[in-house]
Image (cartoon, rainbow, N blue to C red; front, side, top):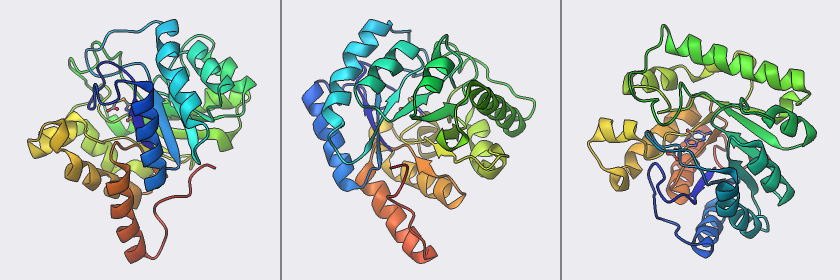
Length: 265
Ligand code: 7PJ
């Protein structure tokens, strides 16, 4: 999954895609490099970020969805708002990537009315305050329980199991220690065998482990992606598609299985 942020201030590539054309062109290069999914986000969820209105988020995301839908990849919309998801689905999105795991008003119902894939991510608190003092009794058990509860809510709303992915939400209300413990225990996060998505690309965890600013986190991010896939992750959310696909191609060949491409087509 290649990340295309169209926010003025995203986590790690703020300002990289200042125009619709530059975002669509970047997505095209990611698909060319082997991305099976392009994740388009118009709400910044970086620690401390303020909320954005639905009309503003739709204005940011829709033109990019329309530009990317002709490519040979599933278009994912990174949103928590039912109105934004509905507009994106109508414009051709095939996946909703929800960092709030379908807890916002109307989201479960909207997803139940559609046929798209759904990623349910764990976040403790809200972006504005989530990194203040994250504490867990047992982070692996707490995150697994949350994801199981949200998957059950989706199933109860009528969303087929085959449409669901789970994500531990690296960096969303977690210390580096929490993130590492989750990565070390990926299989335990999906008791039910649902596929797992991991997003560690360029995040603060990589910076804290390597001492590098966001632009210098490529090698660290690839390390995290390769570890996640070898641990069973079905999908990794990355900014650097070409480099990650190459790393997974080599590791996959050594392991004698294909680790890149495929996906949810
Ligand atoms: C994630 C995400 C993640 C999923 C962001 C950034 C922060 N969606 N959206 N998983 N992170 N599913 O781009 O660094 O980890 S926004």
